[in-house]
Length: 405
Picture (cartoon, rainbow, N blue to C red):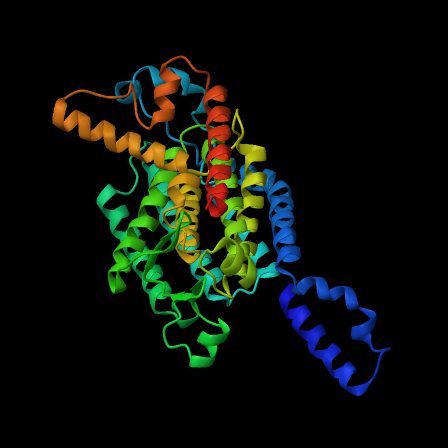
């Protein structure tokens, strides 16, 4: 909406300039030029999604309570001592991820160029993963236990969503650069640029190495699928304590918003930082700032003791959006650092399962690892805040790598 107003104003301004009219309405409303700046629209998107969350949050929570969509809690036979620690959470409304999805989409529609391919693929992936999570949450509520959609069914649909998103990213000209004209290549108008070397979407990059690590061609698609599914499930695993996943989402979303903005500016990306550049990618910062703002707003109600849980509706959607954003910015490997808490949570589960199958012994008292620290005697608030701190430090470290060499 803001971009449409800007485009209309800019066209009117050019017409007035050609006509020599300095008293027209476009000159009078020159402040509308602000709508053309990504920074202004990104900040507006963040503030708008936060404000909408605060405004709509109580209404959505009351609606969820009236629908009796309380969070099922695993029994003592399943989780032993943890059932005592989390017994008070029984009945807290879940599916709060609909608040995140709604505010992000509204803010994106108002502030971003929604037909920008980067914005479109991230938003669509987020919605598709959110829908899958909603079905999973609804199944849990209907059955009144923690067993939702089967793991195989969920993984299948995650694969389908990730495959569609990955193929779109790989074959879309504005993203991949394939099919660009010679003039576009010379002017850097399409595709990515890394210094004086033009790279395709099939290249794997890392900030410490100023040239692509490897070009894998169409085999980059399975890599993209792995990133989207892995990130989606990692955020889902992290969402086990009040506000834990939400707080970590904020630091990761803000980091990738900055990366998208920097990658969209030719001088900063190619001459100074030497990171992949694409002229269309800066618009993604608007979407990511909307996500950060929505996470801040949701945290208002999700902080300990939580009044609402995001459920799989929110966690799968957030993970899908962040994984897709990492691919779009060509900083997939950096996600391991910036999203280190998510990686740590997922890795703890894989290590626990692998160790038990191979050695019949557990590495942690319980996985994901945040439950391990709970069972060590840390209060829930201690675990949450310390993981938030770790997430912020990892995000800062990841951003610092952009100019370390």
